[in-house]
Length: 70
Image 1 (cartoon, rainbow, N blue to C red):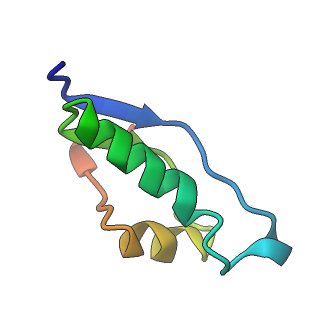
Image 2 (cartoon, rainbow, N blue to C red):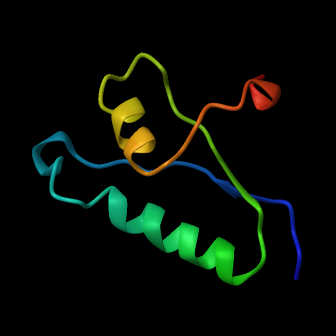
C-alpha cells in the first residue's frame, strides 16, 4: 500500500499525567504504523493556543504545513 496521508484525530492526556510519555506513546505507534503501511505523511490537528501542544508535536518531529491549514 502506498498512501500519501494518514490522519490522526486527537491525542489528549490529563494534565496531572502530563510529562510521563503518555502522549508520546500513541504518536510513536501511529508513526510506526504509517511507515509500515507506506504512508508518506501524517496529518493531525491541534490548537495553537494550548501551550503544551506545540512543544510535544515539535519534539516528535511534527511541523506545521500551511498548505493544509483550513
